[in-house]
Structure formats: C-alpha cells, structure tokens
Length: 253
Image (cartoon, rainbow, N blue to C red; front, side, top):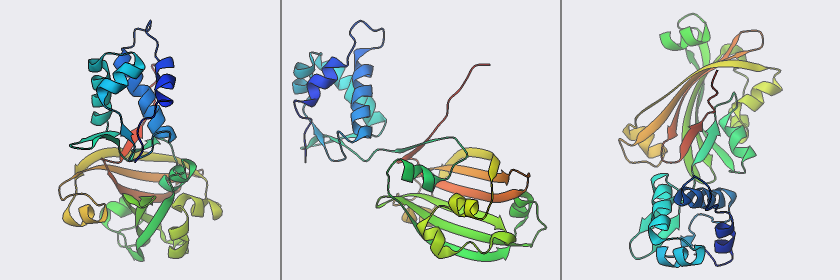
C-alpha cells in the first residue's frame, strides 16, 4: 500500500497560487483529485497524516484537513480508523452526450465488461410501444445487461429496440457496446430525449450492483432516433450513485 511520497508533495506545493482568490484548500483538493484521476494516486494509496502534509506543503493543518474533507465528501478519499486516509475507486464521470456507456468506459481505459442477462423478443408493453412508436403487443427486442468497469459492477442497462434489430446477437453484446453494433448495421444515431432522476434500489437491483438494499441509484431514460427521425432504441438504465456521476456544461444565453 503506497503513501503520498515526498516527490509528489513539492509538485503539489508548486501548483498552489497563494495570490489567487481561490481558497488554498480548494486548490489543494483539485490537485489531489487530478492526481487520483490521472492514476498518480491509485486506489488503495494512503495519504500521509495532515500534520506531515501541511509541513511539506507549507500550509496550515486546518487547510489540509479541509481539502481532505472535501475529497471525502466527493467519495474520492475515505478515512479508516487505524489506517489513515486512503484513495478509493474513483467515480465514472460521464459527459451528457449521445454516446454509449461502453464507448465512454473504453475511451477512459476503464476496462468495460458486460454480462448479458436478457436477450429476447417480447410483446411491447404500453409504455415501450409509445416510446418506440409501435403498436402495443408488437414484437420488440428486449435487452438487459450488467455493465462493469473493470471488475466492479457499475450499471444495469435495460433496452428495447424495434424487431428489425433482433439480429443483434447476445454474444456480440457481451463483447461490444450496443451503439457500436448499431453503427455496424448502418444506423446513424442523431438525437435523443433523455431524463435523469434517482430512486432506491430494490433487492434484486442491489444484489446485481453490489449495493445494500435501498441504496440510492441514478436513473436515466433515453429514447434515441436516427438521422431519418426513426426511433432506434429506448433505454431505462440504473447507475450506482456511489460510483457514477453525470457531467454537463451550462452556457449563458
């Protein structure tokens, strides 16, 4: 188990701007977060005690304590009695774009892996029929997949597609993302309606996602259309709130 070594502390100290209006604790927290996300401080790394860090960085102990507390609140550090402060597995931070979770994880070298739980053609329920623009009870392809980042379960993905996509194979879904397979079929995803919310996990969902029953989950419902305006898929997804966040940029108009 590695510690925050001395060579890293001068680098952090050199990045702090004492003339900036941004509080020093927040600058330090940002630098530590960057070191965690870049892998310089991998999961399991142990930070030196606050007094030692404060002395190395030329900061007060309350400033260091506030920076550490900020990262504990963000879920990047955890305090353990008898062990100290450790880096934990960082959350997946996903921008709100028309991309697939598989592609986003692969791009960030998070080693995506998939268990295909359900792959079957079923009659469309009323809500699914409305989302896909088909008649109620019309045959649709129903998929349910458990997506991992490395060896850690991250999301439970439920999708429904028009019957014309029933040829999308379960073994292919275990190896690649749904959107990549649709692109191979010549589908050009163009626009999606998306809603993000939250709810508590039921017993089955909690077990699959390695969370306690009643844990908070992020939800995302998405209906995607191709460049002709035809509906391609409807998804109802669950994400571990402890390991996953959505990011978006707001622009004043």
